[in-house]
Length: 605
Image (cartoon, rainbow, N blue to C red; front, side):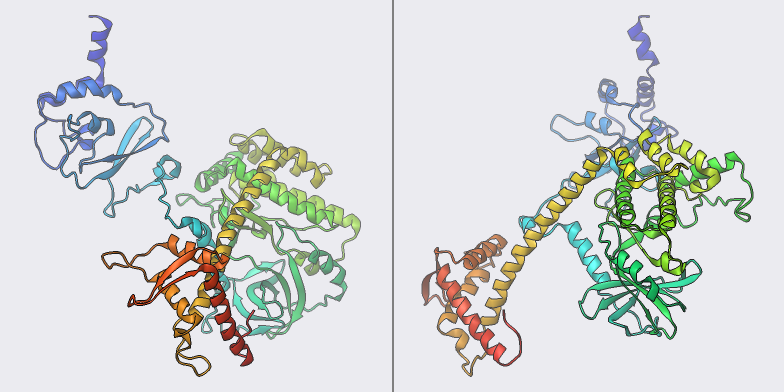
């Protein structure tokens, strides 16, 4: 027996094929029968053996466990992709096709050497269940179909984010739910609670509440942090407050004002910050609330000071990593660069943050695209501790800031809050080294070291990654400018439509009921029909956004091009230029604006 014959006899796929043909179909207990199960029990064709033997070599059982393919199969049976393609007839049809008018999409994925095929659900989608598909990168992205007018409007995701933030900024409180909410707090009105109903937070030993309000003088939305039952004066802290108010940094929530109020029927200390809607803390974004997995509870939780064995600590951190999932190293560097810049601004002003933690850092936007970090609640600790720190103490507090910074990055790298306990630091750094480069590990080790450190010494450790972050920020800025230019053009065209709408079909002006139908206004009426009311040869409405935009642009620029305007009865034909139409529009609108301003109804620009 030669080698080729021996390989054919030992080939399991050949044996399965021969057995299937002899038994008039695959056995019910085999996996292949599960994949090839059909709605009828028709026998395979006599030529199946030759076709299968020729094409089974295309099947690959050594695919990557994370690979995933998406195939469009014109059949209702779920069979392997290569098998279906091998059974196609010369005319392009398949012997397993039931209804060509109902194509479906099947997913296949190779996991640990086993290929799985998934049918679509009742909604026509192919979203599989279970944790095996937690990585969306395995799916082939569907090509986006852009509308012909997509270049005229802002991107959908950006528009959704802005509309959502605007809705949060305009939300009104429920008076039944918040009966004791004051209508005004000093110079701020439209007060709206931001805390979860019934939730009470604390800073040191003081209870706190958070509100959104509108500044009555500037109209800006602000965030008010209330410290309940504060009975001290803040006069001596005026220099400190002014120093914090001068810090204007992209990664710090700027302090606007500090005052004491009795609007809540007590003496409350109010801190006023900039308001950033749709933000959440780093702890809420990246950590579970209880850090448990599959019902596991820490047996040492009843006594936090009890000594834990090394194996328990290590396994607990690994469980948290598996539960929360690891952050990418680029995300960690993104966070490190932003927070180091904020600390550099604070320390450079001769101040200290005093208590950098996950709950104190707000994140806005998506993690992998434009996540913005902002350090929140500055200056609160300085006032509540009631101490005016000397220059020597400021240096000590700045060293503590760097240590807290290192613990924050270590907690994010391990995705576990217990990783930053003093007894677990060495274990956490060792576990972090398995998933991240030595550069990020050396940065965290430096921040956690006992030597005297300085925030400026982090720049050489960050290295060229700073340029990557700068490039991403500039690209995002260019994208926003591009989207802003679209909205600026839309606003310009909107003003043209406002002027036209104010003139057309006006029932009466200066006691003249026919004002909008005579003189220059009649040309504008015909232009309105030319712009919006055109029809096809069959009499159907003709809607063309490019025609409307192009025509309005010519009108706004006062082009010398001529257009032909028809009356609705086609008895009147006017040939005018856009420049003449613009003069008529401006003159007619100025008449309306002058009459309105004289009656003090509106103020026209």
